[in-house]
Length: 270
Image 1 (cartoon, rainbow, N blue to C red):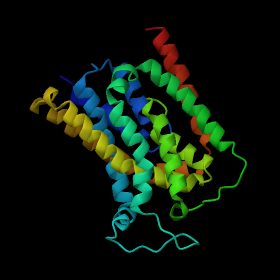
Image 2: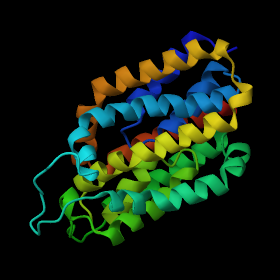
Image 3: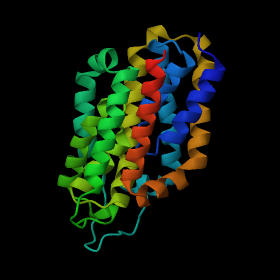
């Protein structure tokens, strides 16, 4: 049985890291290692449920733009060319990770969800951020509405990297967007909107997959984690989104390296 204390601590970590390119999943795995949390089907499902809680904060921030994707709200285009981000952009962006995630879900669960792979992902993901930030060419796409279908697909391909725990979904897609000529701010906006269907889908898959392992006794644990992640993310989301849009990715890369070093030392002395 997992404790409410674990739910609160891990929920706080998720809420604080979901919108930063530092890997929320990686931080949760490392936090669970520090807490000595038992890794089982309940915990793996819990991780995705609380990520969904954090993503709900994005729904609140971007609700008008989300509704406009379905034609439910009229919105003036920010594009100089009169283009608008539409549902097809999102579908193209989530397709690669959605397909690969379903096909290789079991392999990822069994082989990659551990502290060692997270440390590797933190380092390699940090290197990717540095490469993206070192791009010399000025972005050809500076606002969200100007993202092309080709760029959306390219960003989606980079999201495949985030299947490896520690790489960071937001980090890989923002970096991928910048490498495809999209500005840091527009890449961040597209990343957060694209994360909504990805996390709903992933949470649903894990819930159905592990349904038999769950019980009513786990409900307080899940509800607590979900609410904590949602509240913390809601308090942090505006500041953190602006931070990601405006701060160079190299600073996040250095943070990732520092976390990897500290935790590697901790693992060595365990």
